[in-house]
View (tube, one colour):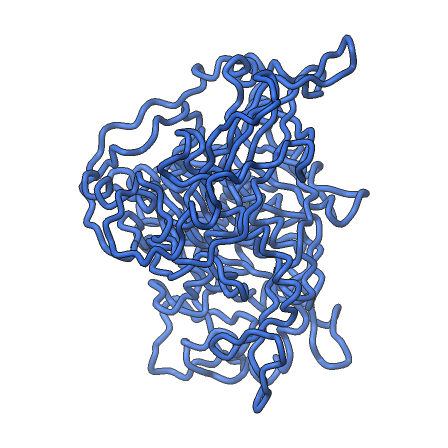
Length: 608
């Protein structure tokens, strides 16, 4: 959905090109390209349908539907977008036979969330809805025919790693609705606000618009219904899941009683990451090839700090068939770390950046849907982001328990890139260029955690970059997460009446009532060890000797930490002329780094 980001600001004195739409001084680079994205945009909006009988067709034929109003729609067709056709493979005949149909159901209501967030429209003809991040992933499900429920649940539809049950997806094609969502809200929201009758289904669709037969429709065919993800990746098929279930949590204050019935929880806190052996930074400015080393250290630390299980979405296959992260993950017990092969390279959401990030968005949703159901808390982090328990806490599991006691559903961690400590880096002369720049390199006997333990602002931080914050959240509460934001939650999808019945204070524009900015001194903090590359060292010999306000992050990208008991009345310069510009986290320095170094020494390393 977010593949096309073809907008740019108008240049000075530039006139709007003929046939191009302008919005707040921005124009689309390719209006025609946006036009052809409209069918994709429409898939995020529900359509009501009603089953009908068609003359000269027997009752044994496939079900036929017509577009309908909410009042005329069937209960299972009130808010759908796909016809799902199921087929079974017969190994004796080698043929597929149709075994059932259903109508898709959305995981979330995108249109309603647009209204709750205070936006006028979910889609615009010009495509200026691109920034609405809750439309980054199209999430829906196809109800399996009842007679196959137990077989799918147990994984018995997969034989010798081959599926015997398949589904075809047939999108119900209509143009996008460019009217405000309130104009076509489902009756279940009981919306009583003023509408202008801008979208009337009987006028737009008519009452006899019968959808074409499936074999005359565009569709995706033969998508395998796979084994449940836990059986594929975590526990052997047939093992009693209930034997692994963690003790139920006690009744706590601010519990939201409208949460759906939860799947069995086998983990308290899990982490997901999307990684590769190598990647390019945004804008293709630099190639970074330390993926294996980064991942091994990150896994080691997260297991030390109390994550019960970690899921690694290995994106290496999008770039090479010769290497992967499997050898690193193989160093760890399968009960703690799971590798999901993820060679997905979907589309480019930034001009010239080759689309890696869209693969990340999909991996995050996959991990939440496939594995989050069996965990209380989940967080998706990059391998340069370390969640560090602080204060009296010894693990992130203990921190999560406190969040539960306080009624927190979304924990927000401040973030700003740390500086690599110059004194711990490899000799700059080894990579020095003719321009005087070099690539800051962590030595083989050091860790990224230790080397980058130098934030440009002292704790507690006040000037972090909010768009880089990360979250850990209750997996049964967040319905859609987008990298840095819990975009749709159980509460944000409730009608006004349901919201108030849950004991919440209704606001016309939704604001998350159960998030919490984590206390960096008493609960936990996040150290962002983002790699510094060669272009970050432009002018470093001069810039790193100039003392500037601590509120300036990037004046010198290399770290020269203030002494622990530095006298602020003194000149902030070292005896060798370098200017102090960052602060160490003493808990990392004295408690967590020694533990990490010891654990890594015992496990050994994978080179590369």
